Length: 416
Image (cartoon, rainbow, N blue to C red):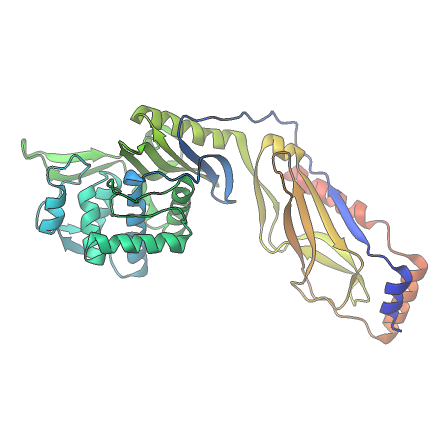
């Protein structure tokens, strides 16, 4: 019988290290609750993907002009890939012009047979919310608006927008056209992440194109996104309004390293949309903080190794662990490290050897994060196995591991 088998049978136990990491924070005030008049709403912290607030976030509603975010996503994708450039031009077809001439909807005020650049179309969709610009983009990219709507639906499926369906490029009312607050937040997140070189267009406040047929004066329009004028760090995205959908908005703001994404819909007026969206995003910045716990590859604890050439192996997280929490949740957060010890060699770097178990007051289920071997550890030879087995059976394991790990955790908590 090998020394390792003797150890297994003789001790007949599975040692579990469950080390409470008492993360210290100053005594915080209790985060205030929040309510909104919006029928549908969601607030997300982008870095961690944490949902800070939601209300009927998976209930379907007409997207209105917020559908234009998908039209722009596809257009941005074509520019990003090199298939199009901002300076490329296209002609406004008779169909696209007639489709919107005299319409009550928002327009860029394109003219029939006008040559218009891709960059102008982007501004016309974002700032002026031009339905005519959306139809021109659809025809330019897919040949027809119906074909482009199929592209929009395929892209929605690819992005994981499982509760969205498009019938046209502008969000003009149509049967079987819907989205959700959660899907719009996802689309906003992907737009910001995927096209950083183009996202800045969403923050433009004015756009001049076309002429007033009565006065001959240039037509200057202003971005309808109220957050751009009222919220520090706001830089996008899109408003929407129809009688069926009410007033809605998908917006984002960044302060320092923190970016929040907000979606509201079903509001009764422009002023209510402005008030409720601002209140929700300010609540997110005020009531929550982002706390880095461990960097990728940073040792969480050094675990004892059985029959290894090294006495210990660092246990690490694969990806940086960052949490967004209210101050109350941060004060009540508890982190446990669990692993079987000593860990038998050989160990290969990247092996899953344990887990972090994190709880906080508002979370019903623990967050479990795998702990991986930060280094490889080879097994000792035959005489080393015998010596190690004898030493362990006679002297047992050290009793200092828990205290050392706990001290390190307390130091990390104080700096968080």
